[in-house]
Length: 323
Image (cartoon, rainbow, N blue to C red; front, side):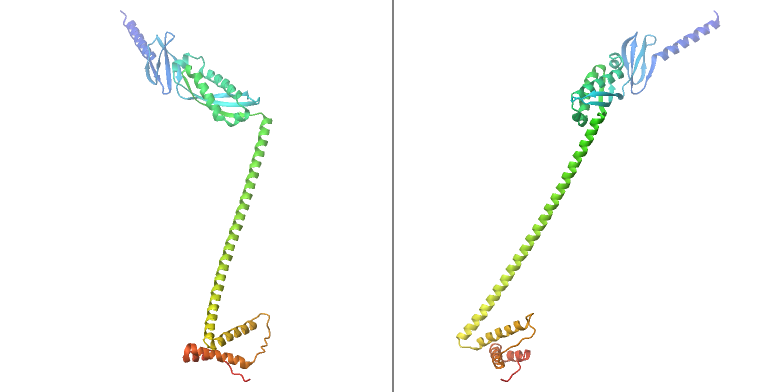
């Protein structure tokens, strides 16, 4: 036997073994699933990590991304319930849960999801008015998500989110909406300004009311105090008059002289202290005034005693005037 031919056979066998091992070992990255086909028919699914297949009999059919993916939905024209044309731009997020269904239940998964999303967007927009469409985006997203998830479930796909990115009404409608918004804001500003003025007037009136109440209470308190003072003065005068009357009734004329002299001097003091009085002429008899003062002195000695009378004499002396 030729040794050179034997070496060639060994090398060929070793190469065939290495090729067979290489064809039977597959490394699947994280986030992917591989479908395995045996003679063209689906057999099983290989997860992330090291996977083995039977060489020459089995092969990898599809490499499926099982991470969450995003689809850019092209802009499209849609008609609302009130016959207003709008342009809508959206995005869809989905995740493959079953690699076999995503590979063999639908021909082109991404294209099918795009077409399905666009169709359902037109359906949802056609069931809503323009104002409702512009103000209820969350409701639109929820409706689309519910419909899309149910439609894509047979494909082994979970639709996680549907987001409406932009809704553009026609230019004339957009201009009318801007004018309406400006008018509404002007109306709110006018209402707020009027409300502020009303509150200011109310607070001002309340302040004036409180000031008037406090002033009235002050006048009331002053009047009560003045009345109380006048009452006490009247009581004192009445008591003094009663004492003088009692003294006269007992035959003591000095008390009467004291009262007359006091009133007499008070009258002179009032005349002299008047603002319009420049010269005061007193047509009285000095002897009578001296007699009155003398009566006061005698009454003082009777009340305070000799010492008190002496002190009173030192306090104020009365000049003697001849008749």
